[in-house]
Length: 272
Ligand SMILES: Nc1ncnc2c1ncn2[C@@H]1O[C@H](COP(=O)(O)OP(=O)(O)OP(=O)(O)O)[C@@H](O)[C@H]1O
Ligand SMILES: [Mg+2]
Picture (cartoon, rainbow, N blue to C red):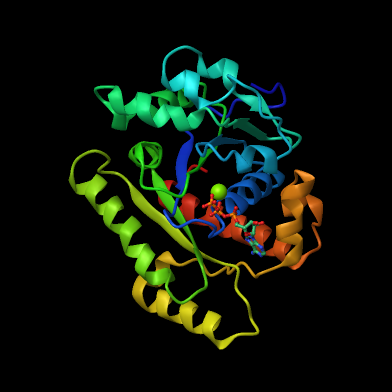
């Protein structure tokens, strides 16, 4: 773990960023939330659960064979050896690698596969180093995503401001309810819904935000992330937009969102 961390003695809050729909802004949200929380003085561990490894490369961290959650889940590596520093002080990462795709099959063979990610996270929490553990989930309802939700305190659902977005949302809210009521993770909460890629030039985007707020009320964050070209350019430079172009509208929206996120967490648990 990076030497720049200070021990806070707190139990890290675990937030899974998830939506089974692809391309809604999960990874963009994870990397910018992690970087923004760190700029506000928090310590963050990002776990890249997605074999696409977009969060890993989006933070400029090289992909290395054998350095991912995969050997930790299968018991061949210790999590402390896998956590890597990033160019962003206060942000550490468990990178992903394409091999993580194979982990789905191996975890499925384990007896208590839904607890696989939780066991790793509990080990990390024992170190008392991090304020937040953020999980970037793949766009599927597979074992990696389900085990991530089974390990989380809260789920953050990014949602693109488009017409069919609401339909997909019930899939994940139902999964959350099943994990709660089935006893797998009774404490799991919907941390919030973040509207992304808002295009202020269309009436549709505004209508979608209104409809989602009418349904989900306070769960929807006040901050809405605009569609912004600097956000889409930043990953090819291996940077979150909050570092790539801090003055851009996209970066400012993510900084504001991170503050709203932290305030919501503070209201829930009081200690972060
Ligand atoms: N607010 C935004 N404005 C412009 N482009 C954006 C915005 N948010 C995300 N993008 C771009 O949209 C694409 C999808 O975003 P991202 O990778 O964050 O989604 P995802 O939900 O993680 O996708 P996947 O389901 O494949 O993991 C990326 O190319 C990203 O750069
Ligand atoms: Mg992604």
